[in-house]
Length: 572
Ligand code: XUL
Image (cartoon, rainbow, N blue to C red; front, top):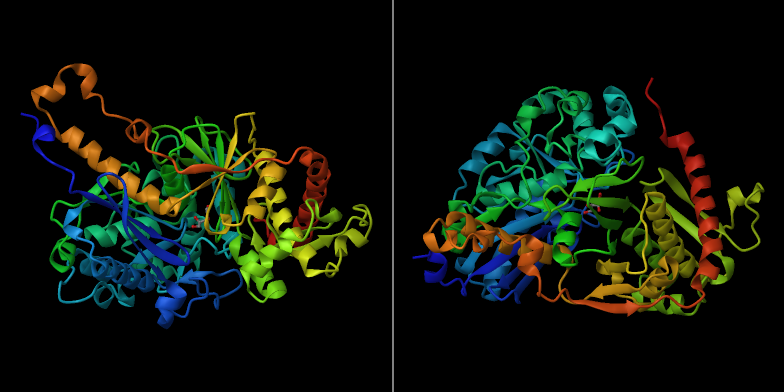
């Protein structure tokens, strides 16, 4: 008799955890995929003792954006407590999947490994996974851009940026984990020597859950400049270009749907998790957004969040000069294209502080008080060093600036009204995203949907600007944050997959057609994606934006040319 028929899974629930830059969030779905509990920890507010600004320590050297991993450990402890206090029954959780901000990493000490593998039920997580569990208590995050030298060294060692991109899907980027590990190896060799294991932030989360070192999944491994994205294994050439003996400090990479193991006994005893609760590989945050969307084709996702990110599904892995090709989270041997822009929400927030005293309501009213195209006023704000192009600085042009004059280098100091500043910022960001996506080979068809997600997708006027600049319909999702949902969906699917593969009974083997496991897309087909049409392009909008996009690209080129003096130090 088939245990699938015998067993009743209707009481099961599925836990998603997302360790983001500013927030750590949790979500529980019941067996019908209804959201039953959500909880969140905002590091700046709920963990003030770690003294972060927007979840990050920015008091390091130039370009350094770091975090104390103990903060994330404590946040996990508090988050589960919070779910339990709300009444969540952790015993119903059949499986857990996580996601995290990409690229950042954690250097485990020998002591840390011992403590992780022997979690003590009498202590809270952060009382045992303390600073001594790590060789670096200020560990790099995705915002860090302090590894320009190491990035160029890695490219040089593998035979150039194109070769590195051919293997790993990206040329070397400062925030990618390989250059970050190389910086630790060259600048803190003793700490590197003592490091027992290196986790990405995502696999660090899974490690805390299983009480042992978890593997890095293919999606997040693709953001390291170390994974051969076609062979799905660490590239020996890239490992050698990064640091000695690196292979033994990393676990073998695994598919995102693979189980890491069962939840550690600690969670069973402390919060009443069931002993067979499965922990699935954690993935990168954008891969998790892809998994949460439940849209199969003809779309581009624009995530307006701490970073702004463009993500698109790819059947094959193209060779890119810039931008990233990552393994797809839910489709074997498929990929996703990713473009990340450093100047997203934090830049919008800084301008909002500046012109509207921090009031988003006032900020968006200002946006509404200006016409599409802003009468030719356009600005590019790379307050933090931008990723594509590598550039820093702000440049404002009004309609009178001639790009071929010296004036174009200085631009305007300020626009004549704060409203113009607001529209110039938003339009400048979206035009830049459009231009780079097209440079990277994004082809729009008449069926293309632009799906806008993230914290800053709440404003209708912003969505209208996206529709007009992309000249395509814009869709928005209702409900909980898509990355978090992606985690819970992946947990649900992994439970299904595991159950299917564990079953060898006669009724499952016959007829043969019934034995075929549903793909992720098939499994969730019919589940509402929560997408709704949010904005249609205004007729004639291309006449306004086509010339403005050209001017915006000229501004970006000028900023990149100016910045190259300060930021590029090619390796001989
Ligand atoms: C993507 C990237 C950021 C982080 C933020 O490459 O660096 O989007 O993933 O979580």
